[in-house]
Image 1 (cartoon, helix red, strand yellow):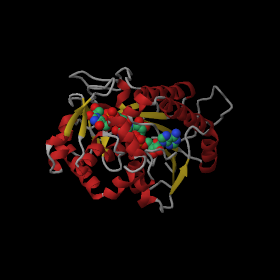
Image 2: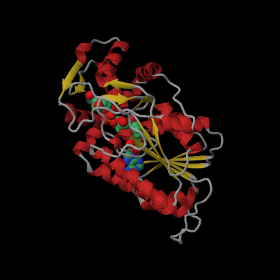
Image 3: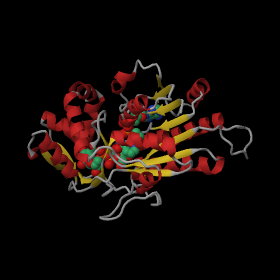
Image 4: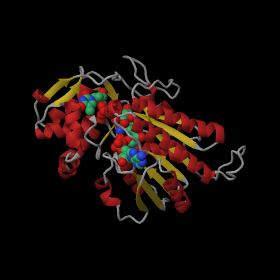
Amino acid sequence: MKAMLVTGGAGFIGSNFIHYILSHDSEISLLVNLDLLTYAGNLDNLKTVENDPRYHFVKGDIRDKDLVEKLFAEYNFDTVVHFAAESHVDRSITEPEVFLTTNVVGTQTLLDTAKRHWKVDPEDKYSREFRPGVRYLQVSTDEVYGALGATGLFTEQTPLSPNSPYSASKAGADLIVRAYHETYGMPVNITRCSNNYGPYQFPEKLIPLMIHNAQIGKPLPVYGDGMQIRDWLYVEDHCSAIYTVLKKGVPGEIYNIGGNNEKANIEIVKLLLHTMGKGEELITYVKDRPGHDRRYAIDNTKITTQLGWKPAYRFEEGMQKTIEWYLNNQKWMERVVSGEYVKFYERMYS
Ligand code: NAD
Ligand code: DAU
């Protein structure tokens, strides 16, 4: 791994991953971050690495074929880690189209360009030979499996059954990635992680939204009965899992990522309020999200037993670090919640 293209590196997980790689990988000589800087992209997340000589930021769209081609020609990447996406379920319910173009077409643009540059003989349609050491990693999600009932876990064999336009677009992208492996022999991996939490998460998502509202004394909008279950993982553990897959993953394989931390939403909200010394009267039950998935839970047996990965953070520890981070970085939050966020919040919750 010498020259890596990271897409969506100005977002929540992408920026955490860039910090992780630049501090953990001694071989990397170049890391290019291609990010369109949509509402979710934020260069403040990368302030501490912007002068690192190995790091280079490019503002641009993964759907822009000419730009992606130019970057591959210029930087000769051997690794692609693809985070860039429209990532919020609620937005996908009101504006699905951009989810399809970014998440599906954008993925295909990256795959096609990587294939052209990485195939030993790109003109030979029957050749399955790729340059040694190249790898394309698709950052996917457990939501592609749909929803679970009260019992059971998602394994890599669980059939895809996405319920929202967001998860359907992610499932579509996964199937294209799989097809590039089956048809062309391209060395790819797909990772499917559960819900992440930690620093730099945009406050449209449950945990930073609730921390921010609690801090300013605004109601905490809990959807439906608040008993939906998510399986939470501290973002740095997701980053270490992706790094493990890049180093040890078998080409063509899918790896689920999760830390066995199932919690109901209302439990999380109450934990945040108690930790921040705020009262439960701020909790407000609101109309449920249409098609709301009831429960997600990951079986992480494959990545833990076959690749030796395990999470480093216990849930309580990760949550403590996360709350402290948001409380200590109020300027970051203030900048994020000005402008477009105000209109989004009114549209969503009024
Ligand atoms: P995010 O919304 O915080 O960040 C997405 C980033 O992609 C932003 O920086 C945005 O500017 C960029 N982007 C969007 N469209 C683009 C385009 N057309 N071209 C270039 N850049 C573009 O998302 P996140 O929560 O960090 O998620 C990152 C990835 O991880 C996504 O693919 C998501 O599906 C997946 N994932 C997220 C979670 C989670 O809990 N957040 C869990 C599992 C998987
Ligand atoms: O499981 C992985 C997925 O986790 C990722 O693929 C997505 O990109 C990421 O957004 C996340 O999806 P969720 O829909 O689970 O995350 P969100 O933070 O939007 O919501 C978490 C739970 O909290 C969900 O059950 C809905 C609920 N919720 C959320 C918000 C924003 C509320 O009750 N109130 C809220 O205001």
